[in-house]
Image (cartoon, rainbow, N blue to C red; front, side, top):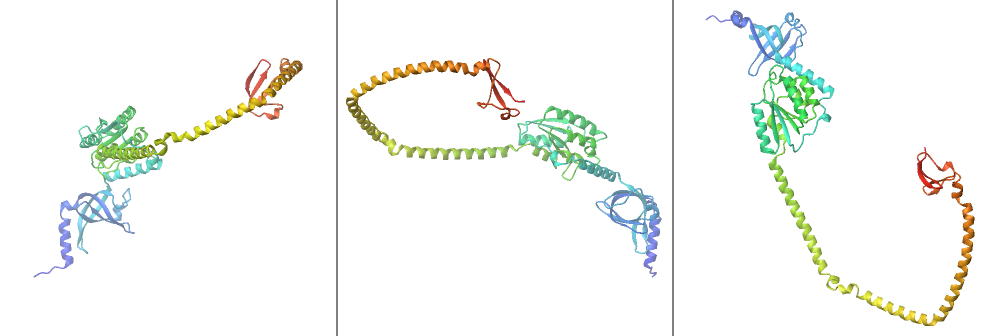
Length: 414
């Protein structure tokens, strides 16, 4: 038997693979992982997809022509060949040239725009509008015949059927579809809906890309109507999700956020009704017990007891007053008559003197009357019913009253 060396076997396998035209010129795409750059300039890494992986190497002579920095997780397109490394017996991918996959470029563009808008504050929670709890009308922007819009309408009708739902069909993918979405969104925002839902089903990043456009994000941010985004599946995130007032993980979740649940509302109403009935019954029982106590009280059972003693006291007082009045009148009638006559004489005399004095005083008072002085152009100034004698008693904006000989006016100090 001829026994081969391991080295000879590996060389044979290498020769077979190098002779394969398919393996000598291969185009392959995948995700970079286990990236290990060597000080010499060679790049070592693993290329993988969902089901398999292969070791890869890119020599420094080829790596120096790359126009981007390789990173783990990056999607790349590779041109190279497959061969065997004789020493280890491992076959691996030898990379001649490499470029970013289109999906990778979209991810990079997505991250750059997300970071820019976040720095501008478009994602801040302080700008988020509250979603109305009991909307009268909801606008749904979605594909006309899509499953997303059907799920939304069905969910809203089940949860809160009194809400009016109007569908505004939009293109959810395709070149420049976002421009049409912006046009429709601006018009819908002016109508006066309580809530706007923007929704579509899941898809790849390319399918969802219109919802990552900067112009659409700024349009969503500037709308005055609260907006719920229900774009894609739970793992799908778009720029519109971050700018919207609320991000729902699915279109159905967006409908749930936009409406209350009528069954929960009815349950709450029943609970409130039970509580109301309980409190009313408790109040009525309390008032009934209070009424029963009052009805059985001594004074209500014997109302005359409230005033009988007072009546007796009043009658005694009346009797005493009547008796004392009679005694007083009898004992002091003559004296009273004399005093009355004397009082009348004194009053007449006093009135005469006072009348003469009054006439004299009126003559003097008229001579000294301020009105006489005021008729010559003088006035009186009052503040808070007090006479003002000096300008120091006043300050700016004080309210004053100025009295002339023929009337008064209100004024304010400037």
